Image (tube, rainbow, N blue to C red; front, top):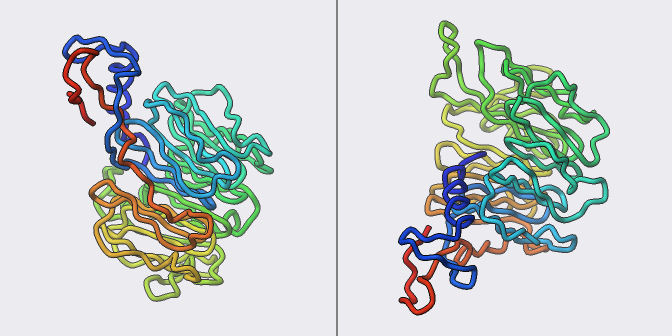
Length: 346
């Protein structure tokens, strides 16, 4: 889910930092127009959502009480994270920028250069270019510094990191830490990990024992609190892996998963599947073809194949309102005195 806009961000940096048009025309910011963009990455906080567009901008919608929707105007973002009441973006140069609630320092990132970001309810973490994990904010227990993180997930109180050997370490003290599944090398490669309040899920790919190369099948396993079927899917799609509250789901084409407070949504191929608490319809997804799914406290959102965003579930704080991408990406008009038509679109 990370780094999809690297090429676009690099192109944006080269184009706009020089102020020169492809035709050799120098333009100022007054010459810029804004056209439609497409969602590349989607992240949901407790009551808000943020989208990284294909031109390196970030757009957010939902609850705005603490400034979590006040996105910077930069066009060089390559990653986005949405926490409880704060949001963060990763610039192309590796620096992190956050905005919104900062009660515990969760929106005050260090000067470290990061490769990816993840936001929990009250803390934020990033993976560094040397494979480390660094967190800031309300992190009562932290991952040991010896963990080399290939992928990280930040939940309500916990943080999980996948090591270079496809083992997973979780810290925080909840059911997530107690029952997290551990995978060994030459059995399963962890491709994605997501955690929330008291449950989590991982997508793993099979590994050829002889070559240690991943095979095409992608499996889903969830664990933790299952009061509302958020870890097991109510038993209709999964089988228990024993007494450790781990559940293995049927299907071999899981492409994405995310965990809400008491529900879970995943993509099996390009089809949305949700389970768990459904009080507000957060586990009743629309039909259609989708690329990415993200879950908030009691709502869910997904990126459709046309780059638009659909949301469903609790709408009390406008967290299911459409994210308007009609005027998010810069286009450039010709210099003063020329044609008013835009010659570049994203």
